[in-house]
Image 1: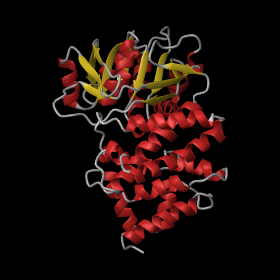
Image 2: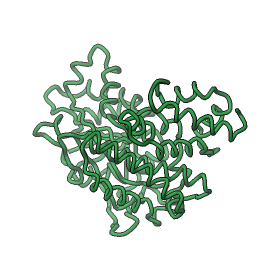
Image 3: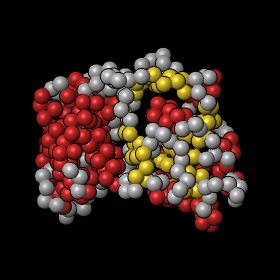
Image 4: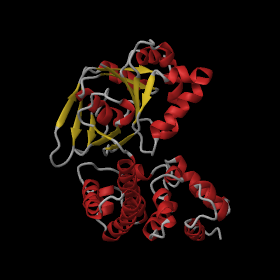
Length: 385
């Protein structure tokens, strides 16, 4: 069996690649980073080190890499005979992956089993997004090519922090891992991934993860940056930060209960587990890394505006989530282009227009005024209004 994985970075090697290896797949990593591809190809194995209580080391073998920028034909050839294709590239990059998948499907034998495609991204419906991009790139041949593949959405969860210098292609991760995959698209021919679990309804899993893990992680970074913390663990050691993060997550749990009927007690235990993971001192995850790309994280269906909009539509509290948005608006990180852009736009743009464009909220939405007020407050701090 063979799997092609787009994105040979830390998550690709330390999460998806590891579980595919455990499932017995030969792994072909596809990436555009020349040095990374070369490093993978000279390595006969790499180690995934789980840092923290209960962590063990896993040795991964049976892999190679292709450079999709320099040799797109090689990627298409690999896809034409692969069983599985996965991604961990970021939702905004999926449109660049789609042409490679189209080229691979064109070369795929009509007699071959469908290519099983899963986008492993921190986004709701990422595989649906990838499918739409594939359909667009395929043009007039879309129906024929899409018949050669099945697309399944997933929910993925493993903290993979910035890596220490000199590790090569080895990866340090947390011990916790979750990979939920919607079962329906596969019928009786599910991919062999022992570390994953297949579910009939993915929505509760992906929203529970996105609105707890991702919301909590980013909120910790933004509240932590406000008090000068440099690591996620240090941020949560501050009682005020911890209370602020917990308040936001209590609101997301209330939304999950209202939307999916999830048990409040189970969600409280889940929240506690998540915060325990964030406090893992061996991960050394930085506030700057977790807080990067604030514009994306403040968009309509992301970790703050998504659950806050759902809460406001149901008449539920949003104060904790709005407070997290306020902290995000204060995030200053010169090395992150989105953080720089956000601060510049706060200087230059009208609060109402900026709120609408960044969050995607209609001005008539019940959440809009609270977010606009947070924008105005930040502009006041900057001396703009």
